[in-house]
Length: 413
Image (cartoon, rainbow, N blue to C red):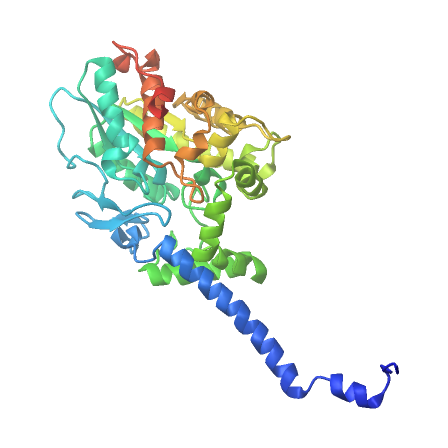
């Protein structure tokens, strides 16, 4: 038997790839990757349809003096990709409240709620939000007629002095007996309009004193993309675009069903900074911005002799740490809440703590949308119970409970 010689020119010629093979193999590989990507995206679109309307189509993005605000009397069926379509209906003042603006029932104790998407009730039908549930529970506990007028804004409450003053005029026009300010962790960590550049943008005096708001959603997309490209590397921008795909959403939704995988991914990102046991210069600056905002709101509330109550409502990762069985090293789920309450108290607001109430709710992270992080309908019910318990504890004499409220944990049984 003869052995083949690998150096034999004839054998080398037979094993050498042709030019056509060099072209076809990469093309086939690329087509395979594209096929898998398209298949995953198709499955993701089937599980999380894109035919949902975007609630932002009910926003007026044209006024730099008011920021993004809802179009009066606009109504749209829209929701989060992970949830079902929900009715988003705004009154004649552009607020998602079951009451018409300008109307106040005689003898009722009125709470005006302000805040961002948490107060708004993003992804949940209005009648299932804590804005709708809370006044009923307070009325039952106090024996008084309590009504709540919701002025929560999808994109946060204020952007500099101009928009803050505009929104506060709306708040005071509602004639509140109490202002309830809902604060979200995402508003603290993001570079959104709620806390960044609170004194107003630094621009050329010849130009407008505030940046121009995008005219429509297409312009908003390109504005955000340009901002990402300017502030991030190309790889980070690509990663941000991929995170908006349905295939990535599907994979994250599946993986985030595991609490350990979810916490590992979430704490490795920007939210880990919020829950870190340490302190950073960036967080100190954000607390200063929060203090300025709290001081401005409290000053206007004080002029009207209206108490300002403020509370941090946790997102999913904070709730998971609070009610979880193990706490990762280097993290403190209550540090952010403690820091915010200290800042609020120093500026005259009345701080409340509902975060510690989540410690009695096993696996409370299951009551939040896995990827988005906002509470679902059951999460809103829990938050409403916790808010009612704190508001009727005696911190507000007018709302002191005549009858004890039920515990939040009973809502989950």
